[in-house]
Length: 311
Image 1 (spheres, rainbow, N blue to C red):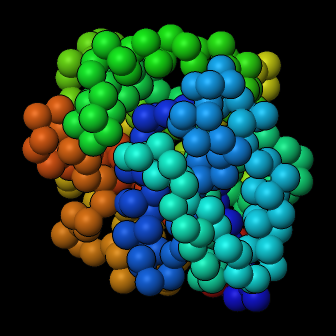
Image 2 (cartoon, rainbow, N blue to C red):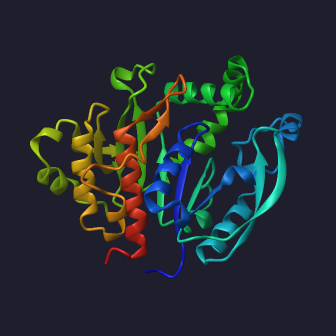
């Protein structure tokens, strides 16, 4: 096993689903083995100061990118950090937190791939790119339910942030090994069960999904498809998983992925594992998303592979 922590980056715009994805991956790897940090804690200004200056939290000048880079380097070398904490409820900074990296470190946030030095610290890089209409719905729900905003305030805030999203957040997509896009059937954002489209770039070795799909029973192939496409001008493999995939179809795929990964045997079982792929629906109900579960499993696979535990 490698003698340093394995670092996963999960980058995406506000309310793109970073925290939901992170929680499921931590379930697979074992929460006791995972350190999670958020680069949004490295804001240079609090909420009041940003309003006075006229800058958004998405702008690089509003964040200590140099300290993010420094802390990632320390974590990669197994060293502790004193991480700042930005309180989203108050808009102010809380006392910093002493962080000792565990076997796996998940780094989520808005600007995690903004500098070359930071990018070089990750073993696996993921970018979340849900449909913008879907992301807007998620952000309205989160910020009204958890952060005390009105819907009008959230929508106005998104409009103000859009130029910085376009200029600084979305371009980071090009650095990702895996691009994750959740989308509803027929692009109807009112449907809670979502398909997922995974762009698999050749920057890291992915499982042989052509062989995996070939090993599976014919019944799951309509719900799980592999194809080719181009993204940002470069060829990519595309794995699509439909929301109507059944528990049995997904568990079959889980077992095939897990069979050569002893580390994952505690997680995979003939009955399937219900600890991942969970999310909260629009009315507060807990839903089980099999596309989300497989996305979390695939990313966990890459992190385990980077440790050499599997050999």
